[in-house]
Image (cartoon, rainbow, N blue to C red):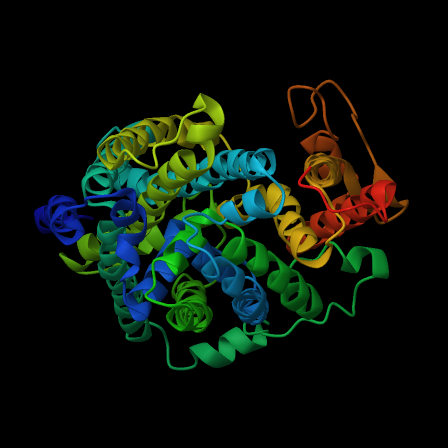
Length: 530
């Protein structure tokens, strides 16, 4: 049970974050200061900021749940992440640093035109709100568990509102500098919390715990998926080939085309520093995933492999929070819970700043027909107002996931995969195919996203019928407009969707194929912008 000391620690952290974030941000005289920190941030700080941004509460509470309920094969995907980031450093970063770009989508504007830049930016805004809405909701899960155990009646929305408000304050005032330096502090906090939990768990589990885990098959690290049929193999998200190949393509999209990450890379002092931050972040992520998988494995030993029902939990994501509250000494419980909050705040602050940056640099002139380029005072005011606006909108989006029963980690990642393939395909089409024009790129972009919606919701593998396409099975389908089979039917028929790491790869291939075919219409003609 939490003590007064724990509540003091959490409260002090929330207040300290706002004060330190405002101080670290300093003053800003231009949007370049506000969104890119005058392009003068050290690579190591950017590296840790990238890791903190992509990690979030999904890692802190979700990855231990993966190890508790399964094995360690989730770690395979970090190999793909490393390969993908190396490719981004080779192919994308030189293009970004060739011009004074403030957003990733400015490259598409230069290559194709304003409409393509705006389409990519709008897609980013929607994707980021949805994906990070899951992450913000994930933070409310353990905190609500804690409040319930303490006899406090709070809702998910109330938790989200407090965290969102504090984060918006320091992001609004301090800009990207506040975000990056707070990310560094917050990352150290939640990693320190994981290490502390491991130390206490090691002192609590029996001497032969590793042999017990090995005997139960919990320590499996490499899964080739050879025991599956060929069709079923494509539905497994953490087999070695899927994790490395699919993870690499996913990482190329997330770290090469997502303004959330690209903004940080553009804030480095030079291209070399940006590349070190990017590749270094993959190595740090490997260490982080290892730590949190170790927490989940030790929790499985600690609770003797008990089912969620036996632990009084409805979701696997509650296992680590339960241990934090019940198994750690006073003060440390509060510190680790503050670390969970820190992970959420780092992702949220990054999203707020990136959303405002993309709104100002990609959409403001496109929508209103006038530029803020020569009005730095007005541009800075608009940037802050948009940060505030997105903060309010974020809280609303986070509430959409309050009734979701899907595993939090995979849901957050799969939402981005709806659009990542289209985004990565658009960038690669612009880099590789000189003959494509804006109309080709736009049609391929929109078409690939629409195709991925159908594939993710309607394509399943059945053990008896093979691959099936079900547009609508019954009036109780997954979505309001009856897209895809009902959850009950999926369970009853033992249907499996394509493994989520393949989503981005499939979307990218569709985009490249469609754009290349459309370009044949004007083969041999002089290049044009649209």
